[in-house]
Image (cartoon, rainbow over all chains, first blue to last red; front, side, top):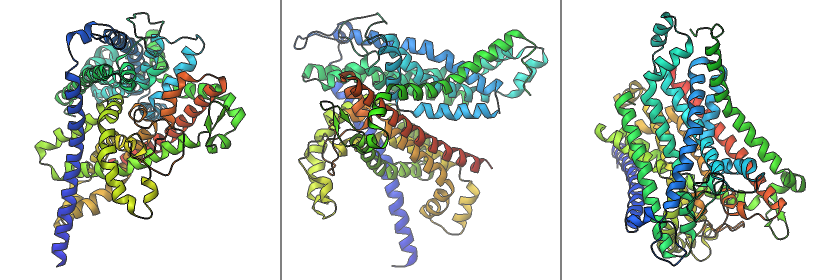
Length: 280
Length: 313
């Protein structure tokens, strides 16, 4: 075999393996999503959304309580996390632009994005559960908010940095103070991006389970009391999947399907918006 | 140039408000560290640092706690998942940047990244109901029959394949970290200047030789950073492994045995801790995990920053 054919064969094998790797990735995605779809769609009827859980063995139960709980926890987490994240990102991109402090906080936020979410759960448990002696929806919402803050902060910073500096200078030249420039010019220019960042951060926390396990805990009954234990879809999935009943497993699959669809739709939608608006 | 904020009181107020919001990140990190140290002080006093890390026992009845078994589980699943994930992830990056036709580059990249959007609890459940039986019935017996027969590998595949074990957990983890490594590697590959690649082609190099001798050496900092980042992710992943690891505190040479990681013990035992020292030891585990993942992620970030500086020059 000549040297050239050897090189050609080696190249062919390597490129073939790379293509194979791409197909392995696609294979896992289709396998997991297909499995969730096939197993989840069966239990997905109206009762599933409208009924509360029934005692084990009694047919006709649903997860209405978990849907409402999940919505409330996520909504309050958004209300706490988004303002802090957006304002924090504003500081990094505007008042502290180019300063060392801005870089440090940026790096630390990037690290916080990847810090294990269960750590946040233990942190909130120590602060908000242990002193009071009972689980609460507020604790769950706070834990999710803490996970949201660095995500929103970083996207806001990036999006504000994309707004051309000359736009600000034009507003300064009209005599506008900096806060007015930020709120009326910069935020408007970056609105789509910030909004998309918020959407993606909601998708990120909507699937979180670990930080809720010992903060909002779980509740088999319908509850809108944020001071008591709150059910959530993800913790219900955990409890039902680990449980012994087939009916529970079916409902866990159905809940998984709903939450996966929700998150994938937001993620894809958010990416399309970014692509359309910023050509990212 | 940034205008002065001193003249306008509202502007000053807004500046302070944003500053406090962004400082909340530093406050959070410091707060987590302080709270975890405070909560685990009981266990730190009783077990010390080195003794805790090297004690294998995790015995709530005799109230003796050590982190060795869970650290071992975390290490084995992390290393094994990276061994599986990195070749696939780099392969995906090569495919997207060098092989795929232009109209496929975007869609395939996004599709792979969707793997990262699937919540970890879904991975966990899928692992328990779908992957674990497949592993137990087909893959693990096959491994035992082939690799398990070799002298050095045999200790890795001892025992009855149940599917609830270190190997299954590592496979799930590997699927979860593929998108992180792949997308960072892809971005790093994309930053290789066309001119450098074209000069290699002009010398008669094949596509693979360009990738191997030009693209990968040029972007190795970024790829390495991506690998360390996914390592940080694997260390802290909780729900995906909680279903398929069995939470059995033991150090086992066989990958087909149940084990525990730090995250899995936290998820399973936190609400069940019935004594102060038990809860304190769990907080101690959380502290160890926090420090471990923080350092890993910090190193990853340093690599990525250095890579960024190198390319932007």
